[in-house]
Amino acid sequence: MPHIDITMFPGRDDETKKELALKVQKFISQELKIEEKVISVSVEDIAKEEWGKHMERFKDKNMFVHPGV
Image (cartoon, rainbow, N blue to C red):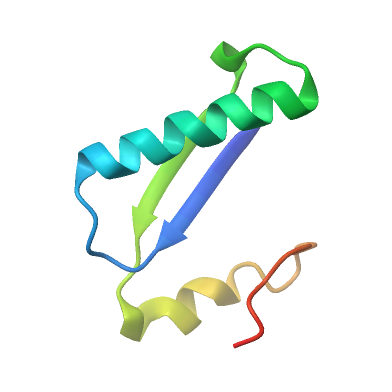
């Protein structure tokens, strides 16, 4: 059902990313009152110099929370 896509600058190991994904999965499960097994979470590293280009793909989406950078 829901898929959560996390993008961030490189620098974290796979274990840290997995722990983050599991915490996000659990939180979403509790908030939406759905089973964890129907929630997928991906974590992708995007180089700082590619960040602007990467974020362009979201320009037409409803981004409810974003940094004021």
